[in-house]
Length: 164
Image (cartoon, rainbow, N blue to C red; front, side, top):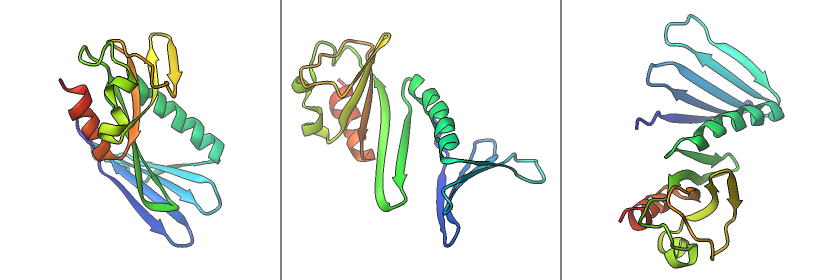
C-alpha cells in the first residue's frame, strides 16, 4: 500500500491549507478559510492551471462523507484526523477484518484498550452495524471493526491483538 504525503500549512489571515500529491503527481489542495468556507483545488500533472470549487461547510462534509464511505468499504484503510485548534493532536481511525484468532472472543476477553490504548468504536457484521459495542460483545470471523487511537496504538492493536 502506498501512502501519499499530506502537507499542511497555516496561512495567517487566510486559513489552513492541506495539500496532497498523488502517485501520478496530480495535486489536490483543500483550504479551510477563516470565513468558514472551504476551497478545493485540483491540479492535474499536465494542466496549465488548477480547477477550484468553493464549498460551504455542509457541502464539504457531504463530500467527506462520500469519500469516507469509500474508505470504510475497503478492508484495511485508515484516515488520520488533525485538529486545527489542537495542532499536536492526531487521531487515526482504521478498519480491520476480524480473523480466526479473535473469533469467539469478547472485547472484555481481548482487553484491547488496556493492552494497546486503541478503542473499538464500531463493528459491522453483514448488514448490521454496532456502534460502541459493549465489553461483552463477541467477535465473529469476518466482522469489520473500526478502531480509533494514535498511530502507535493502532500499530500495537495490529501486532498484539490481530496477529496470532
